[in-house]
Amino acid sequence: MGEHKLIMGKDIYFWNFIVLMIFTLFEVGAIFFEEVPGTEIAISITAVWAILIVVGIVKGFGIAAFFMHLWDDPRIYLRVALFPTLFVLLMLWGIGLSNPEGVTGLPGWCTPNWDSLVTER
Amino acid sequence: MGGAGGGDVKNAVWMRALVMAGMILGLSIAAYVALGVVAADMKHQTWTDEKADYADAKNAYDEAVDADVTVENNTDSPIFVDYANAYNDKVDAHLSYLTYRVAGLAILFVGIIFTAFLAISGLVNSSRPDEDHDDHHGHDEHEHHGSASPIIFSFGCLLFLLGFPEFADGLHGLMMGSSKGTIADLSLSMIGLTVVTVGVANWWREDLPFNGYGEQLATSDPFNGQHIRKAGIWVFLMSEVMVFATFFSSYLRMRTEWCTKWAQDDGKCSSDEPIVLTASDYLRPGGGVVDKFGDSVGDFWTMLPGAVNTFALIISSYTIVLALKVAKSHDYKAPGGFMGKLMPTKKAAIRNYLIITLILGSMFIVLKLVEWSHLIAEGFTIGTEQGSIFYVATGAHGVHVFAGLLIMLYMIFKAETTEWNEDNAQGIEYFGLYWHFVDLAWVVIFPAFYLY
Image 1 (cartoon, each protein chain N blue to C red):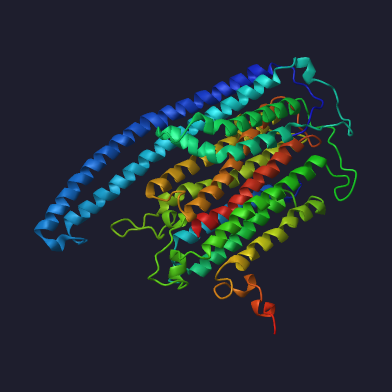
Image 2 (image 1 turned 180 degrees about the horizontal axis):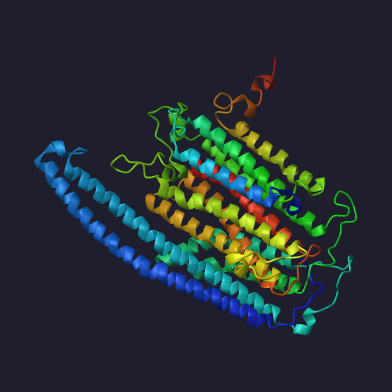
């Protein structure tokens, strides 16, 4: 368990908590600023999206790996945790399949290759 | 939670439950009176005054426009500025009143449910003599911990959800005093809630004497040698992942079709197309919802409850990990200073970390309802596609938090009777897994619904 590993005298739970708090500040802050503070660099929608996704992944990893002990526990629990990923990905991909704009309006990664499905006569 | 096992519960469980329930009810009534009655009445008076000021400012503005048409929407005109300020003050006063009123009512509601949970479960638990609680099963690795309570509980949930559409319509009709709602509409869901209550109370009765020793181990692959309950909680959590994935993919499916302000700003849809307003348009600074003066309604204060809730859940995840850490420690040493007074013994430290977690979780529910009241007041209701998915997804998450709070209440109750150590603290660990999952779900929901 994480309480046995010490970094600068504090256990992994403490450092995980600090990282989660900092990244949450970063996440909320990204919405409040239209420019990078102290510069004139505009924060675009794409940049905000990227920040939200990266922060989400880091926070999700921190919670699952250290607070939920997946990092130390037997690998069977990690496999259980990853099992639904397949279905989640299928569901997200389903958005492309069912969306009226699936052919032209969505990025290629979430749309099937429709041309290959056309019947050749 | 395990089934019946070994342990000592030789005190008057019912009396302890009653004392705890009384304290919670007393505190929640006090908070309701302070926030929902006294402060809310003061805020209501302010709102009434602001409405009168707004009416005066509007009359003055209308008269000024009649006399001089250049005053209309002229931001340099003092009369227009007064008019706009009076409008903003009126809206702020209304939202401020809602904050206190809803916070008070929400605390009272949560307090009553907590009280009922403790009182009913305590009563059921006291239905057998104290000596029956102590069955001395001890450390037997092979003893049976099976329980029918989860099945009873699930059946109750099924009945409740089956009757929920009629329940919601009927309750709404009854509250509004319309002829559409009848008591009969509530029946199926109420039967479901009763079955849920019986299931939970029986679960409590079975688990309270169980001291955590004698955990059953799986004897076949893929979990061979692992604790059965731990495998069970992980499988359960993954089924929950699918529930939230359903909400999330539905949201994305709809969102990709909407012409939102984000999409329009990004050139994804025509500027002539009407904007679909999402929750984040009401909440975040610079969102798509503007008042009649063209100012965005979203600002720091509208985003604050969601942001505070995000921090509250993360802190609560940490406090429950600390409860587990203390429970598993061999030689607990009380920290110095104020924390030492708060956590003088191992048992007190575990209980108090759980209480802090309970307070943070309760705060999450209260702030969530305050935020909803603001959104509804601003016109973001469940009657639209974007409102429907927002309230269903965040509401489902709120229900999970609330269910976790009830389990936490039980864990706090149990903390008085169990001597936890490295070998028997699974109860906290497994509940912690659920609580961390709720936090994890919020990590996805918050950016997707509040920020994007």
